[in-house]
Length: 275
Image (tube, rainbow, N blue to C red):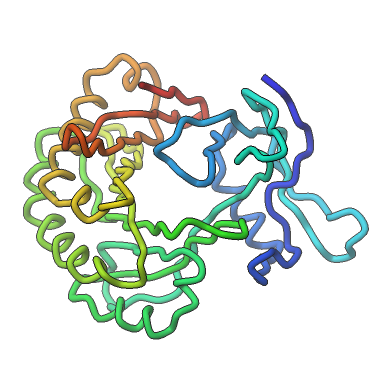
C-alpha cells in the first residue's frame, strides 16, 4: 500500500461549487467516522475500493486564518496518475434541509448538486404522499454524477420478522416514492435500508442500482429479494458473523436481474471486497 500522510479531505474554504462548510460540520463528520474509512472511486459504491483512510483530525488550514480542514492518512493500492480518477480526493456528506411532515419521517431523499439548488424541484418532491425528509448529498467535486440517495429509516430487524415489516410498512410507500421521483430532475438513485441486529447494532444495507435504469433496479420486489440475500448473508456467512458489521453493499446485475453482495464494512472500519 502507498501511504500519504496528513492528506486534506475537506475544509471550510469555498469549494469549486461555490459552497462552504463550517468548523462544526468538520467536527460532526469526525465524530461519525469509523477508525478506518474505505476509499470509493468517484463516489460510486458499485466499484471496488482503492484503499482506506485513518487517523482523522481537524486542524487549521496553513496560511488561511480562521479556516479549518479535516485531514487523514491515506493508504492507496496504487498511486494516482495524472488522468486517474484517484488523482483528486473528494469527500461526500448528506445534510437534511426540510421535511414534508410534522411526524417522524419514514424515508430520507438526498439530491446531488445542482439539483438540490432547484427550489421548484424541491417543492415538487415535497408533495409526495410519503413521510419524507429532503436534503442534499454534497460531493466535493467539480462535476458530480447525477445520483441521489433514498434511505429507508424504518428499521428492519435481522431475523424472520423483517419480511412482514417490509411488506406492510415499507414496500407500499417505497412504490409511491419511486413513482413520484422517477422523472424528476434527471437523477438516478441508490437505496439504503437500515437494519438492526439482536445485539442492537445498526447496519446499513446499500442497494447500488443500475444507474441507466435505476427505477427498474429498485422495483420493490427486487429490493425484497435483495434484502433476503442480505439477511441470509448476515446470518450465515463467515464474513458477516466473524465480527460486528456496519455496512453491506449489494449491486444490481441487469443481466441476471438480481442483487449480489459485493462489499462488507465492519464497525472497526475494516472491510472485505467481494467478487
